[in-house]
Amino acid sequence: MIFVTQESVGGLFDSYADMVYRIAFNIVKSREEAEDVVMDTFTALIRQDSFESTEHAKAWLIRTAQNKSLNVVKSGRVKRSVPLDELLESVLSSPASDSEYELLDLVMRLPDKLKTTVYMFYYEDMTAAQIAQTLGISENTVYKRLERGRSALKISLEEDAV
Image 1 (cartoon, rainbow, N blue to C red):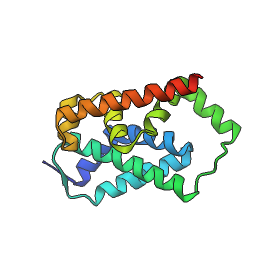
Image 2: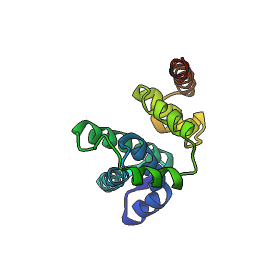
Image 3: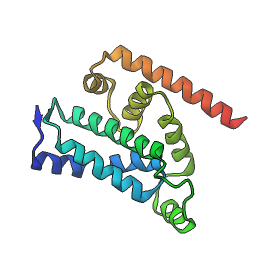
Image 4: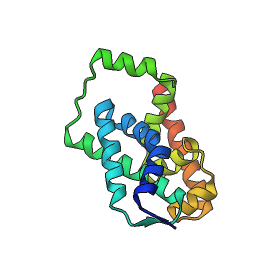
């Protein structure tokens, strides 16, 4: 059991702030908005009492970052155009290729249950057992969601190729 204290929030921030930022940036497509989502997510973390484990806290952060990012996008607060210098800076400073971002974008468009499971498995390197424990589902359900997520991604990739 992890109780939410100033020290535990600091440790979680040190461990997962980059992950939360990547999730937020991929959804809101703006550095400033992504930074705001990171702060909102960790502010919400402070209001929590405790978590069953570090994996549970990580899953909560992933889910909360996704939800807060989607709320920002839905609110219309995010501009749909990005200044050229900001775009160049983000591309040049990022080690990931465009295809990696495109794939992550497709993952983030999956239905919520599939998206969370696929993200945890492939991007956070969690095992099926860890995902099952974190989400409170069986390992078989994790494998089934991964299978469905892969199928959906395959269909999306094939549609993009046509």
